[in-house]
Every structure is written in structure tokens, then in C-alpha cells.
Image 1 (cartoon, one colour):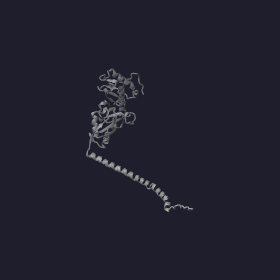
Image 2: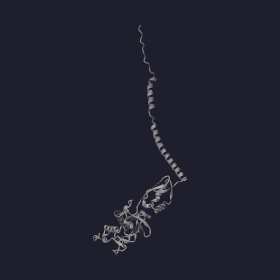
Image 3: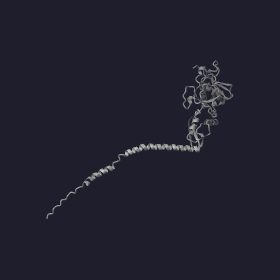
Image 4: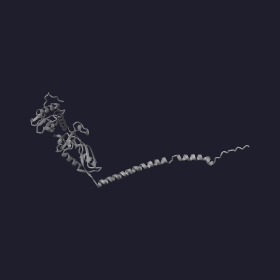
Length: 330
């Protein structure tokens, strides 16, 4: 008996089943795609958020500063001004008194403005520069540099000033030859400064300014030469310690124009003896005097021959006469 082969029908796929994979794929694709609004939201958040954060911090700092100021005002603390690096030559009682006078008070409140106030007041002293002040919980500390003066100058009004050559000024003061820098006067006994007397001071500027003064500059050049000789020949007992002043009343023959025998520059010793130096550096040949090297050699030879002292050695000491030949005018 032959059995009829069953005809297997391929099952029909329903429309829903036929379209489901496509529908699923399309749905899945949508779910995995990033939102089109996400980048825009991030940009908006950054654009709006950062300014808000910055503004909030600024407001916070303002309130914090006001709070600190309110605390300082309610509970003020005071401190003393302490100088950390003042040179030894300035550590004198007159200098301390000058600092007190310029500062105007012995103690300052320890707040944010005190350091700046101290700097502003100390800057009035022309021999101080690079002034830096800082506060801590106890005091105000000052670090500063100092111009070291070279001599003392007295004006016709009786006022004293300190001076340094502009070429030696640590602040780099510009100026022509024979230019000095005028400083405030302070009694600085540790420096043993010599006085320059009878200089023309009618055009002397205020402290801190440059001063064109040929006579005073000539005296400072002589003082510097004496200091160099002391450092080379008699460091333990400098000759300059026996000198009180350098007189330039007859500088360039202005006081005695018709008397060439009158010395143009005179060194005055502590016991009243006068040392006739003569013409300024570079001008000796014009008035037939010994040159500067010979004058210095003669002076220091005399000094050593008299056991390193000039006190009571003579009525006066003459250095102008040449010993090595007749000088020629230059």
C-alpha cells in the first residue's frame, strides 16, 4: 500500500513576524544613538556654569576679606618695625631716632596696609632704597639697601648734607663729571666722614638729587685717593683718621685770583696743622705744581717717618713744590 507522502507546507510567516526583525533593528538603532541635545546641553552648562562659579568665588573672597577686616578692626594687633639688614655703620642712636621721626610712630597695626605704609614713609630718606616691608603675627620686618655717604658738606645756611660721587651711586645716577648725589644728613660717627668746607652750595638741590659741584667733587676725589693709599700702606693706622676737613675756598684760584702762592685746596688736620695740597686732580701741571703721585708719595713718606702721625709735626706741610723736575703746563 502506498502511502501518500504528506506534503509539508512551509509555514507562512506572519506579517508581524516578518517585519519584527526590521522593527527591532530600527528600534535598537534609535536607542543606541546619542541624544542630539547632549552636546548642546554640555556647551550651555559650561557657558553658563563657569561664569557663575567665577562670580561666586569672587563674591566669596569679597565677603571673606570684609570678614578679616572686621576681625582686625574689632581686635587690632600691633607690632614694632624691625630692620633686618641695616649696615653696621648705620647702627647708631641718631639713626634710630631718625627712623622713629620718619615713621611717625613706634608701633603699627599688623594689617595688610601697614607694610606699604612703612615703605612709603621710609622712602623719604634719600639714602635708603630697595625698601621691602612684610608683616607677620608679631612685627613688621624691613629689608633695605643703603647708599654709603663719602663726606659731609655744610651749606652757607648752616645745614649739613652727605654726598657721594654720582659715578659711585648704587642707583646708577646719571650725570656729568664732577656730579655728586646729595643725601639727608645723619651723624654717622662710625664712618669717620670728613667735612668739605667752603664749597659753593648756593645751587645745592634737595636730598636725592644730582648736584654739579666741581669744588666738592675735587675734594671727594682727593679723599678717595687718601683712602686708597691708606689701604695699601697703613691699613692699621690710616692717615685719614688724623684729618678733619678738606677746604676748597680757593678752588681754581677763585678766592685769591692774583696770588698764585695761595694753595687752592687745603687739608686740615685735627690739631690745626694745614697740609697744602694745591690744585685739583688733573690741574697741577697748569699751575706748575708737583703731580698727584708725587704729592701723595711725599705726604705718606712724611707720615711714616714721623711714626705714623702728623700731629705736632710742623707748622704746615707743603706738598706743591716738585722734587723730580720742573712740571710743564698741561
